[in-house]
Amino acid sequence: MPATASASGSTSGSTSGSSRPFSDAFAGNPAIDAAIASILAEVRKRQASITGARPASADRKETLDSWLARSAEVKGRPALYPYVGSGFGNGPLVELVDGSVKWDLINGIGVHMFGHSDPDMIEASLRGALADTCMQGNLQFNPDSIEFAELLAGEASKSSRLKYCFVTNSGCMANEQALKVCQQKTNAAPRVIAFQDCFMGRSTTMAQIGDGPAYRVGVPLNVHVDYMPFYDPDLGQRSIDMAVWHLKQYIHRYPKQHSCFVMELTQGEGGFNVAPREFFLPLMQLCKENGIPVWDDEVQTFGRTTTMFAYEQLGLGEFIDVLTLGKMSQACAVLYTQDMNPKPGLLSGTFQASTSAFAVGNAALRKLRDGGYYGADGKIAKLQKAWREHAEAFVKKHPEWFPPVRNSFGSPMTRIVSGTGGMMRLTPYGGDKDRIMKLLHRLFANGVIAFYCGHEPYHLRLLPPVGVMKPEQFGPVFEIFEKSFSE
Ligand SMILES: Cc1ncc(COP(=O)(O)O)c(C=O)c1O
Image 1 (cartoon, protein in one colour):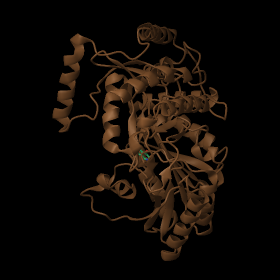
Image 2 (spheres, rainbow, N blue to C red):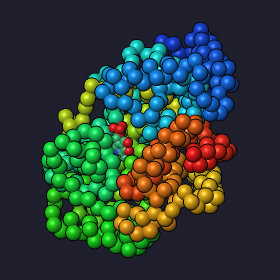
Image 3 (cartoon, rainbow, N blue to C red):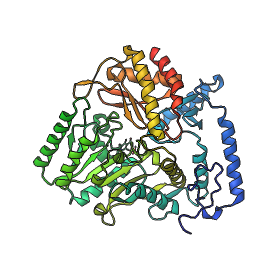
Image 4 (cartoon, rainbow, N blue to C red):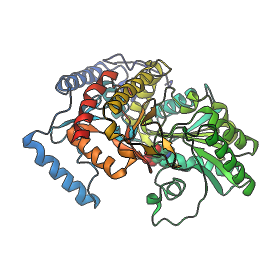
């Protein structure tokens, strides 16, 4: 059966080209199509009652408390937020087991690009559930796993030399595979170059490369990492010169000992720090001149900027040797060029992803690619614009909540509102972590789920569901901001 076999059966039509039934046995089966249509009609009917944030129902509060107690008991620690989802929602709005509804502006840290209970994603998931197995792996897989890799490699190769795609089961695991690819290519070079404040995942190796001291407490250090300063927009060219100087020092000090320079083009956990092309260009050129592979970690940025890959937005595709991605793609992957293609035996693993994850990943990627999301005028750029307008007006109205901030280099930080595409950041209270954490809890109680990022200073971070959120929905969100800041 060719991989493009199709019998849509799509009830909404908006997943066109993406709703190939995942079990060919049921392709075009009218009974299955009718069953799915009737499930989706029920979903839509119930969604009509979810139109904005609302408090818990008095009679369901105990349900939430009891789930949270069970969670704390089994995990050995309390949850950060009193969050247990009911398994239902409407786009950016999610319902919890206590019947409350909240604006979900963090989405599992950027995973649910189409928010909650999106009918197109449910349809893809239902069709995926019809396949013979829940999980697919590297030994036995179905066409949808190939389509997933083809889609990513196809999009990536449009503006880079990236050619091959290996699918894996977490962002961290994609990073592990990427590191091995780089190490093999450089004959087991022992050192890694990374940016300050980077985050890479939670394996023993990634916890060491990631620049978060708390994440490696008790982990023996056996990875040699050379940290580079990230871009400081307030220092401009000086920041670029400083970074180039640092890189030259490392290359001079440890010749031929670097397996890669790993970089997030917009830092995620590190503080939604952005940098222009002029910052990365000389660093990438230096890497090329010295045979150091450039590895672009897009686990958090992928899909969220004004291009599908963040390197496209910066016009840096020609320099990328290896790229990792995850989160919104549902399954994770490492992509690499022909030149970096490793020898057999280096990459494998039991799991790739679940069949429904491939189905939803494929549907989401196609929708993002074809649905007017990217480009300077795309839906993602419009959402960033709406965020900035609301956030800047808010800062202007309440300067008392936004005292001056110093960045990690100690210089005054002028950008209180920042971010790119679907990555949005606001820096209240001078970047003080305790006060921001308290604010996050007030926001949660009042109906907005957000998170933090950065290290001295800390920031309020939003990863809204850019696939479904509308610019005007920032209106009710900022009303909750107003209330929560004033409390
Ligand atoms: C840039 C970056 N790399 C890697 C990871 C690790 O991904 P995962 O949590 O799926 O293992 C993350 C997760 O937040 C990330 O932001």
